[in-house]
Length: 537
Image (cartoon, rainbow, N blue to C red):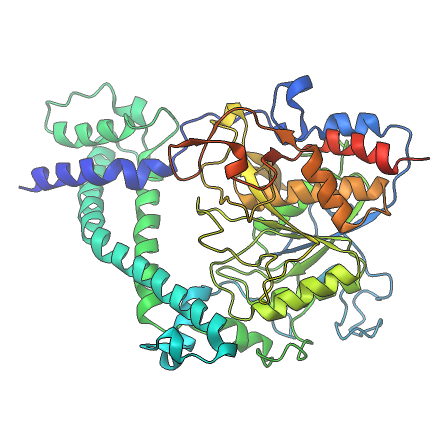
């Protein structure tokens, strides 16, 4: 009875749940995103060739703000390119420049307490919205909602829909995956005891006979390993994937049932709905930084040509860092104030590798985007990693204001790949007319915490690639405006002639169905046109 039910669950769940998350394509060359297809054979950005065009020209330092999870301020490939507040005296405990933020040497952290304590985890916006406005909106119809509350009601309804979907997924899948996990743990104990080691891969058990006393257990693991061509996959990695999946299912259940803890408010002590209550947080960008913000920063500005680690895209840059995205979802107020802080401290480009499906205080962010536009600041945002059409399933922040008008200083970036990564379009990338252009976002090697270097995937990586290309152009052509920059990048992107696979599906479509430009960003071509238009020495 046990073996029969276990085999059934294995067939039904194993490939979908476990191996859909294990890459089977070997990654390409480190730094492929900097190369050019015509010259180098990789469908990257042509940064290497762009610098060849710029030889002999002088650049000016461009400040690029990164709003993210935190940064390793001591990283060997980043510490020399960090923005330093020229009006602040480090470590004296005073607000020397009078902006309200004490000792903001390399930026500011809106996710912490005044005493330096930082948030390490956070909740999801869908849960915050659902539980906060449940009493006000549950059972209501749109006709009964006052005009000024219509958008918020729509956000609540979407939160309810998304949480219901997560809960239904839990109800449908958790009993099966729990039984599957228990059975797999049993076979794992039998095999590891027999081998007298805790970790094994396919080669370690392929010589064993399926007919001996361990036959059924060996057979289970050989069947699992047969579903991937990656020989480095181990029993431990498979078990970890299953545990992660189970935890995600349980988290979906918890978001629907339990009101989220206000981790942020316990530390910041601000009046959240008052955008003018803006002086909170600390200057600690390092604690609980994680890898994400460090990785994003390295893509943009890791020191070039120093024979250490990786090369960033911009060779004359200062990274101004604002921590506003702890684990979980960012808060609209923190994002809005982070944008304003970046603008007020000289950033000309702001990278935003984060996002969420609902934005209850969108007006705060919209107003900050408009403020950035008045100061000539370009915002670059990752499109999201859900493999969905953002025209049907919005991803925030976005450039469409509540009054229906759109920002003129906002670029939304999808994630592209290379033939060596399995395709020109990343299977996870969001897409649609709300996406402007694609940029490399698969197997992008960059800086990580503790002087590390790792390859990551995501529109979180595509966005800083695009921001870096914009920063490269801005440093050599400083008078270019956000509108001119957007026009330049969209005109000069690489045209994808072939049909591409739509993310999240199997259908082949024209690239113009995935973004407004139908292109992948190309630094070489952008610089070539910038020289023609703005390049008088």
